[in-house]
Image (tube, helix red, strand yellow):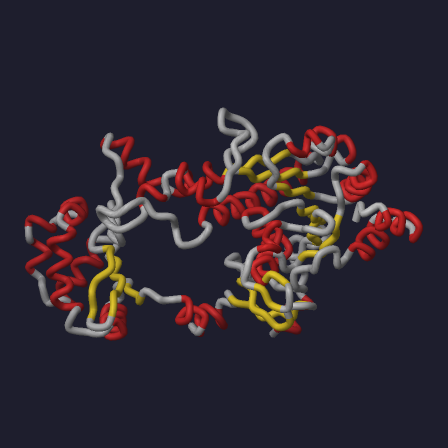
Length: 404
C-alpha cells in the first residue's frame, strides 16, 4: 500500500510555500501543507534557527519536538536583516505561491518584506500571517503565545474541575487551532486565485481562533447573561454526557439525544423510571439535575470495569468510551495503524522516530510523510542553487558573509 500511495498524485503538488514560522502554530500549518505535497521551504535564522530547536526532548543533539512539527519541509538558513538575504528572499518569492509567517505584526514591513512589497514581485502570492491578536485592533502589537490565547480567548475560564481554578488545556490548543485556520485560509486563497488570478493576504489570530472554538459558551452567555462556569467533564448543553466512575477507573457515556437516553435507562441501566421522572424529562432538566442523575448512573457503572461498561453500552448502540492515556492511544490499532495517526520516519541525525499523522484524509490523495524535518540549513545548496539558480560564487559569498 505504501508503494501505491507513493505513486499517487498529491493535492498540493507544485505549490511552493516559504515557511518563515517558528515554534508551533505556523510550523504545524506548514507541515499539513507539506503532507499534501506542497514544496515547503523552511527559512531559519543562521546559527540559531527556529526557537523550537531549543525545546526538548533531544536525541543525538537534535530536538524531537522540532522534528515532529517540521516534517515534509526542506530547510535553509537566511539572514533577512542583511541586504543580500533580502535579495535572496525576493528571488524565492518570485517563484513561490505562498509565504507563511508568525512574526509580530509589522516586523516583515520593517524588514522591507511585507505583503505590499512582495505582491509587487509576485502578484499571485498568497501571504498568510498568524499572530497572537491579528494584524489590526488595539491588541495587535501585543506578543502572543498559546497560553495567552487560551487565557484571553476564554478557554481557560471554562476548563477545569467544578469550583477549581482556571486551567490551561493539556495541549497547545490555541496554537493548533491557529495553525489549522491558517491552513484553511491558504487553501481558500489558492482556490480564489484560480478565479481572480491574484493572491491575497490572510490574517489569523490565535485569540480569534480560541474564541471561535467556544461557540457554545458565548451563545449561552448571550442568551442568559450568566457566565459559563467550569463543570469538569460535564457538558452545559447535554446530559447524560459526562465521565462516570467504574470499578477500575472512569468511563465516558454520551447520550446526545432523547432516543439514546431512553435506551440507556431502559436497556442498560434497567432504570426506566428515569425516563418519566420529572427531574429528568428534558435535556435542560437533565443538565440542571446532572449531579443527582449521575449518582444513579454510577450505581450501575461501579459494578463493572471500564471495559465492561464500554462493551455493554456500545452493544446497545449508545456512545461510550474509555479515557485513554497516551500509552493506550499509541498502542491502539484503530488510531495508530488504521487511521495512521503516528508515522515512523528516519531523521538524518535523530534516527528512526515517530511523528504525528495528519487528521485530514483525502481519500484519493491521502497525506504522506515524504521526508523528515530538516537539520539547520540542510538544503541551502539544493534550494539556493537548484531552485533559484545562484552560482557557486554567489553561494560561497553568502556563506562567507554568514547570510546563510
